[in-house]
Image (tube, rainbow, N blue to C red):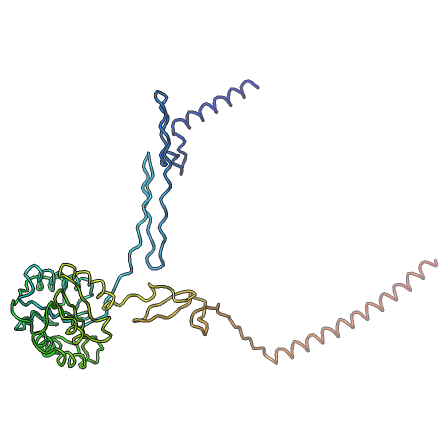
Length: 370
């Protein structure tokens, strides 16, 4: 019997060795050291040194856009890929936006193409549409041409196609006349500009590379007084003083300068910060204990269900359930009367029991005498 048990144990141990050797130590859920540079030894040649590779660092998951994980498992390896978090999306506030672009003789054809690319990139960062941002383009040199109005296109693709077809006018630089044309023809209800009651900001972006050949300070002042916010972009030989006369206050936020048209696309990100309304809560929780809720360009704190916002408008406290019970006074008096009657009955029974007990004791004493 002992030999049979020993033989059975040896047989089981041999099967286990064969199983482990056949799987290369790959148990369920464990892929073995082969993932970290492990190579099975070759006894016919010297073994190569094992290179230890550190596991990849896990990406930090932000509050606004959680990272997703995709795992692919094969018979030889397991690969884990983590998607990097994307930047918070930028939704532009609705605008009536008019581009005023200089196409005078000093702007070479290839440079003017870069201006059109800049306009297309700007439109790409905005949320355009009939109820969103509307776009118009004023092309100017010695003369002014309305390329399209605010009501002409509500589609990004159509706008870009129209911009790609714009031709330079190739003469002087009448910037003041261009601003006046935008004021008279672009920012009007007939052209698609929305009424002041809707509180839609009106914005003009002027792109020029030279000195205006007419007066710009008076017409720019009238435009600003009418509620138009003016950004002035100067390129190469642009006159900085003229840019300041045209732009809105503060000048540091409304006057831009680049050395060449080749780098004008870099201004797209700056305008994105100025014209786009970022989700305020994407920038942080702002001290909210539970939830930060964006509201226009502001925010407010909110608590989870079952909690109330404290007076500091930041922290939360668990709701206190107050149960108010009312007692029927008549029922209370009846209960007291019933208890009193019960007590009287109990006392009477106790007295009778004591009397019977004393009589029983007397009877027992008499019996003991006989």
